[in-house]
Amino acid sequence: MNDDIGTDIGIDDLPVRDDLRGRTPYGAPQLEVPVALNTNENPYPPSDRLAATLARRVAETATGLNRYPDRDAVGLRTALAGYLGHGLDHRRVWAANGSNEVLQQILQAFGGAGRTAMGFEPSYSMHPVIAGVTGTAWIPVPRAADFRVDLPAALDAIARHRPDVVFLASPNNPTGTALPLADIEAVLDAAPGMVVVDEAYAEFRREGTPSALSLLPGRPRLVVTRTMSKAFAMAGARIGYLAAHPAVVDALQLVRLPYHLSAVSQVVAATALDFTDELLGAVKRLRDERDALVDWLRAQGYAVADSDANFVLFGEFADRSAVWRGMLDQGVLIREVGPPGWLRTTVGTPEEMAAFRAALPRAAGR
Ligand SMILES: *Cc1c(COP(=O)(O)O)cnc(C)c1O
Image 1: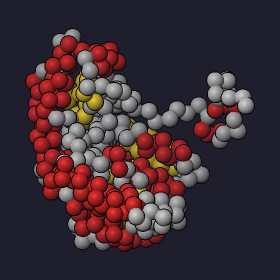
Image 2: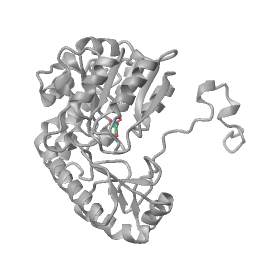
Image 3: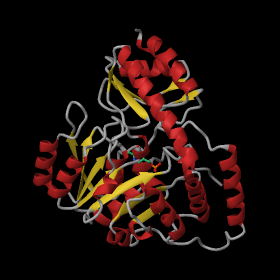
């Protein structure tokens, strides 16, 4: 039989959707490096006690894997609601394979062909990607120079475009900027459709920075998304979730695939939630490490965006690619993302940040 691989057939030779032609897949480099600070992962692996409990509960689940999982993941959603507080219950919480799948389901239900979604850039690169994949037209609106949402510009763009979905990331990736609740309320009042506050980094926010969860009562068009990939150190488990009005959860059930969340995923997520105190202890260490990093970078004379997340955006560099490469040559992988001239580093362990601090002066030539 002839092997097709190696022939010069490409995507464009296939009858692929016209609107997918010319696109490139999401591709943060997955390189083997001593210090990986490029995808905002939590550097602390599960403790031995958590890993052993996960193994035991997965083993118990294994004997039932001939059956489909709980399609509605009620047990997990109840546990997630308990973690979030704010009087939430499982009817107001929905879970899927990473918050990216949650976002995709939101756009499948509320976006799609002939509809529009708006975001305030620089922001999370997957928002426009998921919009595109679901056939939703993307409307980017620039942020202010200090990376806050420029509220007058935002309200003006909403009035002009009447978007079906508005994305607000808070804390925002890649800038780390959190939004005041008053800005979210103003967007909610102006927007005709759904408003999604992507709170992937909520647990890392500084003291006194509010969560949009407190805005949920009486606001059925508000959705707050969260993930276990960052604070809960479970990026490999692929668990994301949201809190919203029960009618929003009903709408998402129209588009989700049956049994989308495996029994293994459900038990892993619920087990991690049992270790919330332990996992949030590591988050506290990362927040302290982040604040120390911001101080250090500023002392070196860099511009640094205030961060409520587990990463820091800093600059400005005439040739940021050269600095990124210079870091990689020293075994430190950071991310070339955000406005031109800026770089983003995830906050790692004290040892990893020592390596970062040692490498940067050489990479930047100062
Ligand atoms: C990391 C990140 C996510 C998380 O995606 P998962 O699919 O849950 O791993 C969502 N939103 C933003 C802004 C992020 O940076």
